[in-house]
Length: 307
Ligand SMILES: Cc1cc2nc3c(=O)[nH]c(=O)nc-3n(C[C@H](O)[C@H](O)[C@H](O)COP(=O)(O)OP(=O)(O)OC[C@H]3O[C@@H](n4cnc5c(N)ncnc54)[C@H](O)[C@@H]3O)c2cc1C
Image 1 (tube, rainbow, N blue to C red):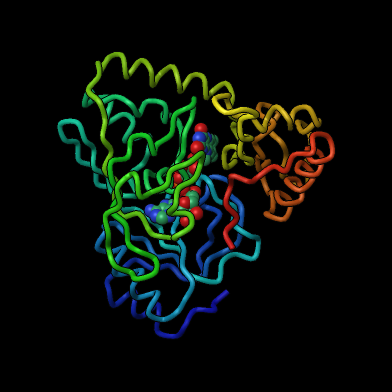
Image 2: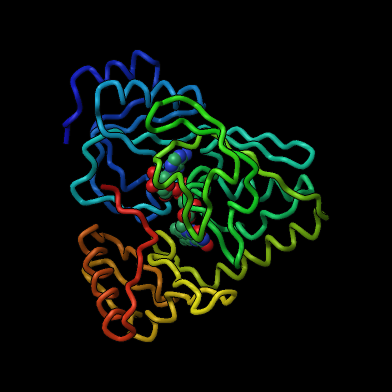
């Protein structure tokens, strides 16, 4: 795979950026699936991100961003473009705010905020990935979501390649989504507004959430819930877990190649060792068909296929 415009790799190296050519992507995802990217450029500060993306865009090459790679599925044939691997990860704690570069590990932010006596983020304990990825997909658990805590986000606009600051109202947070998924803007850093709370209590809450997750999640490589939960039947009610429908259609135990439905959670597809992307997609298709046939419901995928 080497469809890159000539001179691009030299241009990135001239910017003193860390570049790997024909780089396997499976290792950068929690699914451990997929072929190589034409190149991976690792960026360690917002300035490096801007330099990298402007150099790539100037050549017309395709690019995308990986944070923790915990919500992506990479095709077997790989990606004919540049993956920007977000590793800018500086974190600063203020009186009741926390400022983090996009590549900061979400779990690290959860503990940093608790140790600083700042509440609101403990629900995210155990969600893998970076704060950038969490904001883009409005990651959440137990009825809360990261977008609830966001004050503002510093982005690089995909269209103009100029930086901008967007407030929470401009980010259009919804269930597992934000407007950033539509605009393609790249998150450089995030400001979270948090409420003071008792440190001991927060640390205990984190332990509780982690213990509950350990029981429910599989040990094999995966990308978390494969499908979105369904919208509430009536306003004010809770979402219907996709896992309940999947359980009812006999999802647990289904397998295509080394892709299988977890025996712990019917909405999680796991990689038993050597799963291919095509196996995962075939299994997902089978699950969607069964749910459509039995309930007349179209499941929507939460995991993002790199395309
Ligand atoms: C075991 C397990 C449990 C999970 N549990 C949960 C859960 O409880 N709740 C939940 O919501 N999710 C869960 N997930 C899914 C996943 O962890 C979240 O979606 C997470 O927020 C993704 O962050 P990431 O950094 O890994 O993003 P990635 O997977 O790297 O990227 C996801 C998408 O965001 C884009 N992106 C990433 N960083 C940036 C950036 N800086 N700027 C612009 N775009 C960016 C990517 O291009 C991609 O389209 C789970 C996953 C696993 C493996």
